[in-house]
Length: 396
Ligand SMILES: *Cc1c(COP(=O)(O)O)cnc(C)c1O
Image (cartoon, rainbow, N blue to C red):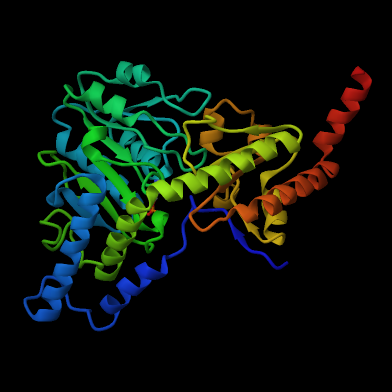
């Protein structure tokens, strides 16, 4: 095995060498506590504020609407718990979709146990939510609506701006998890009319363990972290200076280079999708064909297990992901694939390829040929496929 092809950019991305270079000084001599008054502390503070400005410019917000967090999951947790707690006097009803990331869905489940009522709006078969269904779910006592901008498994892009517009007159706060969107599609908080937005550095070639929650001025939200007065008293913790600096450099690069990157990823994606659907029998594409992230291809292959496919792909040097939650110790297929109406058996045979900026057109042929070979081999060993063939013969 000579090649190594990374196609799991929705799980995480490589750290951009330029980002790493920008971070190193803050791990070496720039270790001062940003709250201190001596120079190395003040320098760190300045570097953090510079990164904050970069984030604000990247998503079209004001600088003082940007709050650094420890991850995308923390930003989602804070947004949802913080709004629920600060606004429960106005209502205890929350709205979301059935394909959100677990960092959103599990927080909603947590709140249900604490007396909040949640409406999970089901997406359509193409993995996109109907704006009217969201609006029909919103009530007088709804205090929060959270809809992800782009799905991490099937890549579908939700109509956030339309929902934002329709919600404009309502008191409910509108949050979007834009973790998968940054660097892949344009994100502008004013154009989207969102009140809160989550993002995470490691999904756009920044470091792991640092994220952002955008909170529009005037939104009433409780803290998640209590302690020191960092982040204008809203998020205690001594700042992760190096991580924040890295996030700033990474988001600027991701947004500046978005048009070229997205165009290249989309070309690779379309070529892979076209070839797989053409050349692999019984293959389907999960999620809308057009309204999806430029780097996302998610397939289901009948008669095989996604886990087996992943293991063989790894032997071929291809790193990808399956749509089932087996890695997390559960044998259930992913809630996202089931939400599309896929049968369990078919959802089990799914494969997510998430293309990134570093992939190249020259990878395509090897990837498609490998998938073809492996799927065929797995089917030859599959009792389901055997049964299908036997039934087919008797039918004929
Ligand atoms: C990765 C991801 C998260 C979690 O972000 P972390 O920084 O890894 O905690 C949340 N939402 C979506 C859509 C993601 O893809």
